[in-house]
Image (tube, rainbow, N blue to C red; front, top):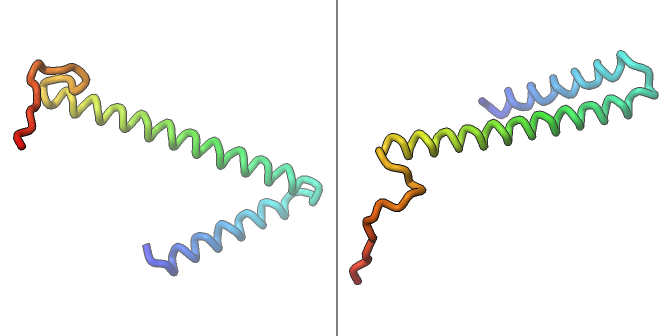
Length: 82
């Protein structure tokens, strides 16, 4: 995406936030900020959990594709010749 498009998306998000705040009384502004912060944290936790699950699945798939488990020793010892 171009920098111009990213700037426009960011600006649109800021206007959207202002529009939502305008719908509620001014006293509720702090509540909306707290709700926004909590939702952002929830999405970050969800993203981190999904990423961890995806990495775990990829590791399981790669170990099963090799025909052996990377966790278990195969009985072969690696020797470095200097």
